[in-house]
Amino acid sequence: MISRSKKDFKLFTVMVAIMAFFYNIPQTMALEVETHRLINEFVAQNTLSGFSLDDYLKKQLGMHDGIKTDVKNQKIFLWVGDGGEKEDSYIGIRCLNHFHDPISNTGLAGQYSARQWALMDAGSQSVLFENYSWYDARSYYYTALTALDKLTRETHYAKTFRALGQVMHLVQDMSVPEHARKDIHLGSDYELWAKSKKATSISNYPSIPFIPTALYPLSIWNLFDTEQYNGTNPGIPVHGDMGLSEYSNANFLSPDKYLARVKNVEVQV
Image (cartoon, rainbow, N blue to C red; front, side, top):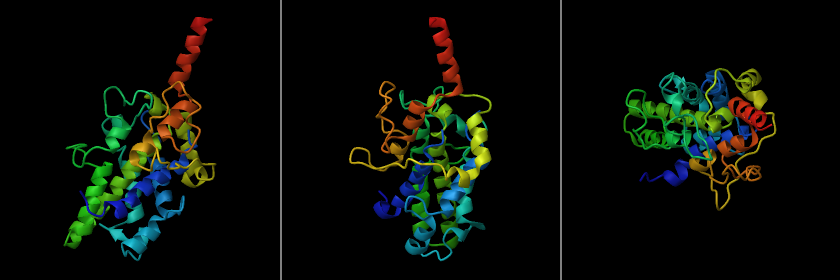
């Protein structure tokens, strides 16, 4: 067990939780990679829901330049942006694990669900395409905090913030109805809309932040799915203590499901 988990790793839970700031956002596989990068960098550079990564780095880790601290020849907020982009960089591989149906608790066609993928044990995601789960982020962070030589520290800080960005990417995908309903398609009106709005414009829309409760505390697990919504109780996911996949699945129809419902009605008539 990592000794500083309660204090230091709360940073990462809060950071990923900020993605609930974009809750109101209803793709072959996902949002455009540049959209993920822009959202990640926007979150890293701004104070949202009372949390500032810049302040944390300055006050808790003694990094006087905060998010603009250079590690491995790149500023920290750009590493977070890299994670948002690179989680989709292995076409047909990682992105197959970016779906989570909150009703069945399953992913796409036998692949890992996005929640499972995000919470895999450190070192177990992919031998070929590296490991960037929540627990990998924790492991990299621990090494960065305890390593004795500068190169090892910087290497693992870079991996820490890239991994954080990749987990943020997975949370963002839960805002896409197709990802919460396991629908693959070529192109998406929502994807194009989000791309046109940019992160700063999206942030101006009303948001429903995740509100922790005794039953549903702040955790990576609950950000994806609190298992309150079962498909027959659509009144449940209107509060801030539900997972983002539940909100998207209950409140938005994806194109494939919409067409299937229309065809079903036509057959019945």
